[in-house]
Length: 149
Image 1 (spheres, one colour):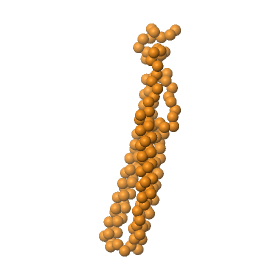
Image 2 (tube, one colour; image 1 turned 90 degrees about the vertical axis):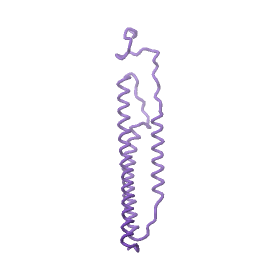
Image 3 (cartoon, rainbow, N blue to C red; image 1 turned 180 degrees about the vertical axis):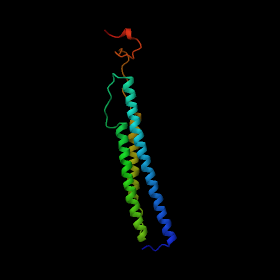
Image 4 (tube, rainbow, N blue to C red; image 1 turned 60 degrees about the vertical axis):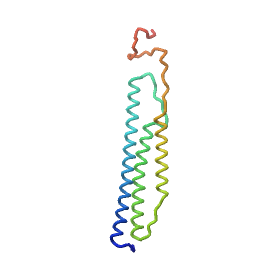
Protein backbone atom coordinates (compact mmCIF):
# COMPACT_ATOMS: atom_id res chain seq x y z
CA UNK A 1 0.00 0.00 0.00
CA UNK A 2 1.09 3.55 -0.64
CA UNK A 3 2.50 5.90 2.00
CA UNK A 4 0.89 8.91 0.29
CA UNK A 5 -2.07 10.66 1.86
CA UNK A 6 -5.41 9.90 0.16
CA UNK A 7 -5.49 13.31 -1.54
CA UNK A 8 -1.93 12.93 -2.87
CA UNK A 9 -2.72 9.43 -4.13
CA UNK A 10 -5.79 10.80 -5.85
CA UNK A 11 -3.69 13.50 -7.55
CA UNK A 12 -1.16 10.92 -8.70
CA UNK A 13 -3.86 8.74 -10.24
CA UNK A 14 -5.55 11.70 -11.89
CA UNK A 15 -2.22 12.77 -13.40
CA UNK A 16 -1.75 9.21 -14.65
CA UNK A 17 -5.20 9.32 -16.26
CA UNK A 18 -4.45 12.69 -17.92
CA UNK A 19 -1.24 11.24 -19.32
CA UNK A 20 -3.12 8.23 -20.64
CA UNK A 21 -5.71 10.50 -22.30
CA UNK A 22 -2.91 12.55 -23.90
CA UNK A 23 -1.49 9.33 -25.36
CA UNK A 24 -4.96 8.45 -26.66
CA UNK A 25 -5.32 11.87 -28.31
CA UNK A 26 -1.93 11.40 -29.94
CA UNK A 27 -2.88 7.97 -31.25
CA UNK A 28 -6.23 9.26 -32.57
CA UNK A 29 -4.35 12.05 -34.37
CA UNK A 30 -1.94 9.51 -35.88
CA UNK A 31 -4.83 7.34 -37.06
CA UNK A 32 -6.67 10.36 -38.46
CA UNK A 33 -3.60 11.66 -40.29
CA UNK A 34 -2.90 8.20 -41.66
CA UNK A 35 -6.44 7.85 -42.95
CA UNK A 36 -6.36 11.32 -44.52
CA UNK A 37 -2.96 10.77 -46.16
CA UNK A 38 -3.98 7.39 -47.60
CA UNK A 39 -7.30 8.66 -48.97
CA UNK A 40 -5.76 11.83 -50.38
CA UNK A 41 -3.12 9.76 -52.17
CA UNK A 42 -5.81 7.58 -53.74
CA UNK A 43 -7.72 10.70 -54.81
CA UNK A 44 -4.63 12.26 -56.41
CA UNK A 45 -3.77 9.03 -58.23
CA UNK A 46 -7.31 8.71 -59.62
CA UNK A 47 -7.32 12.37 -60.66
CA UNK A 48 -4.01 11.98 -62.49
CA UNK A 49 -5.16 8.81 -64.26
CA UNK A 50 -8.35 10.51 -65.43
CA UNK A 51 -6.49 13.56 -66.73
CA UNK A 52 -3.57 11.67 -68.27
CA UNK A 53 -4.72 8.12 -69.08
CA UNK A 54 -1.65 7.34 -71.22
CA UNK A 55 0.71 7.59 -68.24
CA UNK A 56 1.03 4.44 -66.21
CA UNK A 57 1.18 4.92 -62.44
CA UNK A 58 4.49 4.35 -60.74
CA UNK A 59 4.63 1.74 -58.01
CA UNK A 60 6.83 2.64 -55.09
CA UNK A 61 6.94 1.32 -51.55
CA UNK A 62 7.16 4.88 -50.23
CA UNK A 63 3.82 6.27 -51.33
CA UNK A 64 0.97 8.01 -49.58
CA UNK A 65 -1.18 4.89 -49.26
CA UNK A 66 1.55 2.88 -47.53
CA UNK A 67 2.50 5.84 -45.35
CA UNK A 68 -1.14 6.31 -44.34
CA UNK A 69 -1.58 2.64 -43.48
CA UNK A 70 1.68 2.78 -41.51
CA UNK A 71 0.44 5.76 -39.52
CA UNK A 72 -2.86 4.00 -38.74
CA UNK A 73 -1.02 0.87 -37.58
CA UNK A 74 1.40 2.97 -35.55
CA UNK A 75 -1.54 4.81 -33.93
CA UNK A 76 -3.08 1.49 -32.92
CA UNK A 77 0.25 0.34 -31.45
CA UNK A 78 0.51 3.62 -29.51
CA UNK A 79 -2.89 2.87 -27.92
CA UNK A 80 -1.53 -0.47 -26.70
CA UNK A 81 1.65 1.17 -25.38
CA UNK A 82 -0.44 3.85 -23.63
CA UNK A 83 -2.60 1.23 -21.96
CA UNK A 84 0.46 -0.74 -20.83
CA UNK A 85 2.12 2.43 -19.51
CA UNK A 86 -1.03 3.55 -17.69
CA UNK A 87 -1.45 0.16 -16.00
CA UNK A 88 2.23 0.02 -15.05
CA UNK A 89 2.09 3.52 -13.51
CA UNK A 90 -1.18 2.68 -11.73
CA UNK A 91 0.34 -0.24 -9.87
CA UNK A 92 3.57 1.63 -9.14
CA UNK A 93 1.54 4.47 -7.59
CA UNK A 94 -0.39 1.95 -5.50
CA UNK A 95 2.84 0.40 -4.22
CA UNK A 96 4.44 3.81 -3.69
CA UNK A 97 7.33 2.95 -6.01
CA UNK A 98 6.72 5.01 -9.16
CA UNK A 99 9.58 5.19 -11.63
CA UNK A 100 9.21 7.05 -14.94
CA UNK A 101 10.12 5.22 -18.13
CA UNK A 102 11.81 7.43 -20.71
CA UNK A 103 12.41 4.57 -23.16
CA UNK A 104 8.79 4.66 -24.35
CA UNK A 105 9.03 8.41 -24.96
CA UNK A 106 12.20 7.97 -27.01
CA UNK A 107 10.81 5.09 -29.08
CA UNK A 108 7.55 6.86 -29.91
CA UNK A 109 9.34 10.14 -30.66
CA UNK A 110 11.80 8.43 -33.02
CA UNK A 111 8.98 6.56 -34.76
CA UNK A 112 7.03 9.79 -35.30
CA UNK A 113 10.19 11.46 -36.64
CA UNK A 114 10.71 8.58 -39.09
CA UNK A 115 7.09 8.83 -40.24
CA UNK A 116 7.57 12.57 -40.69
CA UNK A 117 10.69 12.07 -42.80
CA UNK A 118 8.86 9.48 -44.93
CA UNK A 119 5.95 11.89 -45.40
CA UNK A 120 8.41 14.57 -46.53
CA UNK A 121 9.80 12.20 -49.13
CA UNK A 122 6.28 11.52 -50.40
CA UNK A 123 5.50 15.24 -50.56
CA UNK A 124 8.63 16.31 -52.46
CA UNK A 125 8.79 13.33 -54.81
CA UNK A 126 8.56 14.51 -58.39
CA UNK A 127 6.81 12.42 -60.98
CA UNK A 128 8.37 12.37 -64.46
CA UNK A 129 6.85 15.00 -66.73
CA UNK A 130 5.52 13.45 -69.94
CA UNK A 131 7.06 14.46 -73.26
CA UNK A 132 4.67 17.01 -74.77
CA UNK A 133 6.56 17.31 -78.09
CA UNK A 134 4.73 14.26 -79.49
CA UNK A 135 0.96 14.56 -79.87
CA UNK A 136 -0.95 11.98 -77.88
CA UNK A 137 -3.82 10.02 -79.34
CA UNK A 138 -6.36 11.12 -76.82
CA UNK A 139 -9.74 12.75 -76.91
CA UNK A 140 -8.24 15.39 -74.64
CA UNK A 141 -5.87 16.55 -77.39
CA UNK A 142 -6.52 20.21 -78.30
CA UNK A 143 -5.70 19.61 -81.99
CA UNK A 144 -7.31 16.36 -83.19
CA UNK A 145 -6.39 17.14 -86.82
CA UNK A 146 -2.68 16.80 -85.97
CA UNK A 147 -3.00 13.24 -84.67
CA UNK A 148 -1.00 10.58 -86.57
CA UNK A 149 -3.04 8.38 -88.89
